Amino acid sequence: QVQLVESGGGVVQPGRSLRLSCAASGFPFGSYGMHWVRQAPGKGLEWLAVILSDGDTEYYADSVKGRFTISRDNSKNTLYLQMNSLRVEDTAVYYCAKGTSGFDSWGQGNMVIVSS
Amino acid sequence: ERVMTQSPASLSVSPGERVTLSCRASQSVTTNLAWYQQKPGQVPRLLMYGASTRATGFPARFSGSGSGTEFTLTISSLQSEDFAVYYCQQYNNWPFTFGGGTKVEIK
Image 1 (spheres, chains in turn red, purple):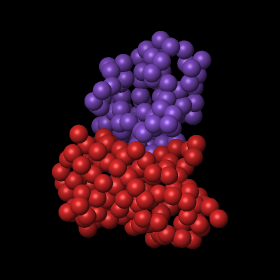
Image 2 (cartoon, one colour):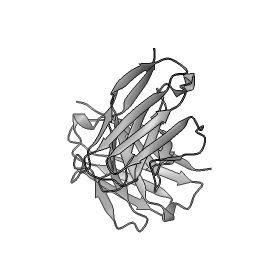
Image 3 (cartoon, each protein chain N blue to C red):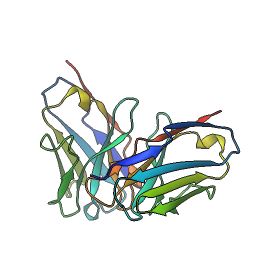
Image 4 (cartoon, chains in turn brown, purple):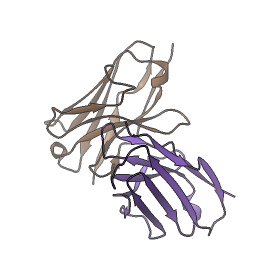
């Protein structure tokens, strides 16, 4: 079955960087676009970024464009989110997700807390 | 950017009642519209895609309709396990966007 397992979250100071990983299994990872979505405490879902199966095409939400970079290593079946210049408002649970018509599989979520 | 607006933000419903949730897009998203169910402390779960196709595991009491800018999720007879937050999402244009959610609570 499809599994998406995120790692790399934690507590970080404002202005610092963090890289999240999402290890995928149970499906042909290299054939799917992959997404990052976040949810601030008590708030709704916010789509952040996608990297298409070709690995060369990326799209970002305006809120993270220029600060976050999505990437993938198809040889390792792993998705990444490099987060730079972190802000307090980036505090959230970060999910990786798979799907072409809606997100049919989600990771368990990884908490990132940006605090001094 | 397509702005997705859900209404109402919350509603209190008794088990067995019919529930209708709305989602409006600022510009047409054709039928590239998904609905998700999220229960407290859980990961969102895909409920509907293509505006009206139920995802695996959801019963027939859930139905979706709409196209263009107006969409509806209907639960014909609310069960106790349906109390949750429901989000719509458009996947017609980048950036993909979610609505703010509708919380369905027990009356």
